[in-house]
Each structure stands twice: as C-alpha cells, then as structure tokens.
Length: 391
Ligand code: SAM
Ligand code: FES
Image (cartoon, rainbow, N blue to C red; front, side):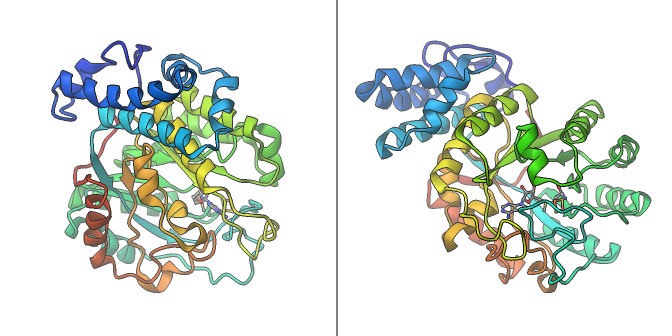
C-alpha cells in the first residue's frame, strides 16, 4: 500500500495521494508540521532514536535489529516518542477519524485446537451456538441503523459452514443494506473464498498469529503455516482487501519473533493489521501462562502503523479487555484508527469466549455508537462513519 520510501522528516511522503484521497485538511504545511512536531520531540533528546525510527519508516524492508531495538525500549519517554511518531504517520496517511466496524460473531463452533483459544473444539464447557440467517441479518440491520457502514462476520473455523448458505447471507447484506462486508471465518478453500467474493464480500481478516513457522506449528496442532499463507495469497489474488495480524505474548514467543512479524506485515502489504495481546483462557492448555504485555502490544501497534503507513489498524477488543482496563485509547494514540463495536445478539455474546472477561459482553448495542464517540472525543479525534475502504 505504501508506494514510496521517502524520508518522513525531509520530504512529503506520498503527500499528493494523501490530498487526493481527501485525508486531513490537505494542507501540505500543516501536515508537515504534525510530523515535524513528533520528530522534533525525538530529536531534542535522542537523535539516534529518531534515526532508527526513520530507518524503519523508509526501508523497503526494515532491518530486524532496528525493529528489535524499538521493541526493547522500556523508558516511558522513549515509548512516547515512538507512539508520537506512529500517530504522526497515522494522521498523515489515514487522518484523525476513527472508523467503526460492527462485528457479528455468528458462530463459536470450531474444528481447531489452537492452544490459546477458548473456542478450541476440546473446550467442552463452552456452550456452542450458531446464529440463523434471520438473526445475522437482523444484527446487520442494527449496525446499519446505528449509521455504521461496515460489518465483520466472524466465527470459529466451522467444518459445517455451508458455503452457499453463507453466500446467500453476504448477498442479502450487500443488496439490502449496502454495507462493506468483512469476513473472518478462517482457513477455507480458494473456491469458497471466490464464491463469497463474487457474492460481494469486500474484505477478509486472517491473522497469521505468529510469522514463525515453528512457533506456529507448536500453537496450532494439525494446522499448517503453509496453508495459512496460501489462504492469504488466495484472498489477495481474489481482490479482497486483506487483513492479517498477530498475538503478542504467546508462549515461546521472543522479541525476534515479534520483529519478524513486523517484517511480515511490511512484506504482506496488508490493508488491515490487527495486533492483540494474548489473554489466557482457563479451558486451554495455556491457562497458566501470563497475559501479553500491554506496552509490547502498543509498541507492535505503533510499528505496524510505521511500516504500513495507511493500513487500517484496530484498537482491538483484547487491548480493551486486558487486566479489566480499557486501554483502547492508548492504542488509538499509538497508531490505531479503527474500533470494532460488538453487535452479536446479547444472549450469545458471552459464549463467544475466545478469552475471559471480554469487554462489552453485556452492554446494549444501541449504546455502542455513543460510547465510541465519547471515547474518541476524549482523545481529540472523531468517529468516521464511512465504509473505510483500503487506501
Ligand atoms: N476462526 C477465525 C480465524 O481463525 O481467523 C476467526 C476467529 S478467531 C477466534 C479470532 C481471533 O481471536 C484470532 O485471530 C486470535 O488472534 C484471537 N484470539 C483467540 N484466542 C485468543 C486469546 N486467548 N487471547 C487473545 N486473542 C485471542
Ligand atoms: Fe478455532 Fe483456532 S481454535 S481457529
């Protein structure tokens, strides 16, 4: 998506296209000043740090050592420079608006046994559900009525997902509600991806979770890293706006693994990147592990912004659920530009338990837009009710 390797501080990066896309106020001087302010703060105290961030920003493929150096910073002031740098990139490439995507978790049935996930098929304590076509369409209507123009249809990876049934739902949402449709239903065949794309699906989310093949194999019994990559390739080839992402704090994950994830994001040129902290679920083999670190998750969010420039990056619900505090505003300040309010019908919402104590389980969906507006206004941003297509 980014098509230049200009120095953020010295040139106007892809500035013409920013203006053409109607982002920001289009004033080159003001845009330049935003970036300069962030960089000046860094320069004043630590020119080396600025150099590393700028190298990461301009490099066609940032060096592992540079990314690792940034991931290892712990000094609060240095972290703030990183977040400010990412915020300056975000402001320049995607503006100050925060996009809303209404998510419908239409089934928690899953054939897989990912070691971290509460939906894994071995979790016999989870009450399984699958929404009917009518329930899904009614939830999509609620999203539309809230003024949101983008829906995410998410589920566990179901063996029994009837591709044609799903196609009919996508078609109906497109024809009657005209929402941008994002799918997040895991690894499927190219033929299924094609069927749903032809039905009008616009986007697909498939997180890589970790870009390290060995770690991936340890965490995903019976699944294959190669197939995950095949899916991502197929999706891009079929013209989906494609999203990926990772989990931070997985057992066995190192800073080098995370740095490689950042390189994976750069290489994949994704339209959307989702970074979330791992949160242990009691009914999984990782129940006794510690949760992912908030600050590492925020550093990864910032780096995802810096290397992708104009990807859509959510302040994930997992960031909002970690340790019972809503830290999504921090993610928005570190480069994120999307929020994903939950429109799963209330009785089912608590059963989509990928991790415990998920945020917004009991809230009334009607209150979601106002809640999002408030959160976003508190940090001087505004809710963008457009579809939020890829740049
Ligand atoms: N089945 C689809 C797939 O595999 O892409 C979508 C559903 S999956 C449950 C959605 C996301 O939940 C995963 O990509 C993963 O990153 C996240 N997730 C699962 N377990 C988690 C946990 N314990 N903590 C944080 N995030 C988790
Ligand atoms: Fe369902 Fe991982 S446990 S996709």
